Length: 104
Image (tube, helix red, strand yellow):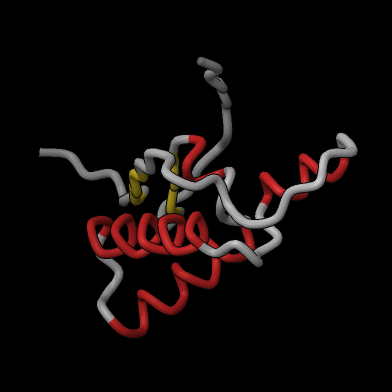
């Protein structure tokens, strides 16, 4: 298991999306951005709606044998022929919003 630890400055209104390798192996960052924009228009921008829509995109891409997924790109860079996503992988996604601070 490989874990990444990141530090980043965040601002009110930022959206933080984290996921397992089932997400990063199957979905490009630009696709995630598209899903966030589309979900906000169609379903409302709740963290649950976004997380579900992003996970569905990963599951769909995992089953597509013709897609050039991030995993397929990594294989090709290593000289290994591969197309499609990472089939039958777990996908977990969390979405968090940075909200304004308030005092009680």
